[in-house]
Length: 106
Image 1 (cartoon, rainbow, N blue to C red):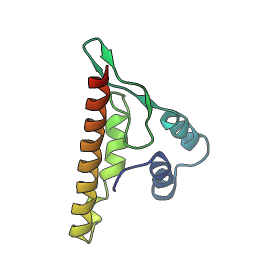
Image 2 (cartoon, rainbow, N blue to C red):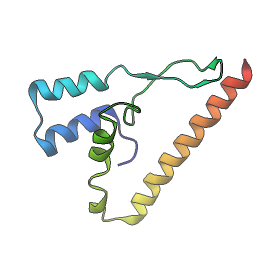
Image 3 (tube, one colour):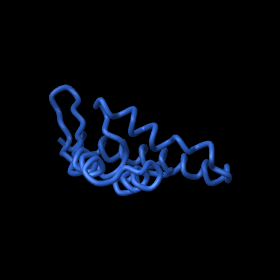
Image 4 (cartoon, rainbow, N blue to C red):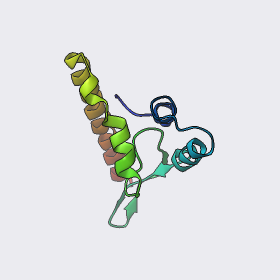
């Protein structure tokens, strides 16, 4: 599970669900070259590439999220699952600190 890269999600679509050819290319084009930023009142952060996670606020958000977590019950090593969840939590904390620093610089 860890941090879902676009490549990993596309591989899962192809290998586990048999999505190939044009449908897979459509998903790839939809996910590729995404950016994100944060806006608080009239202050905006710089845009950054979104190379992992699922697109937020789209019609396909729930679909991509479910594809990422649907096999969580097959995890045989609970310690590994805990470590992956901690990695995700720490990644989010780090991103929040970076954003805070950037916003307070202005």
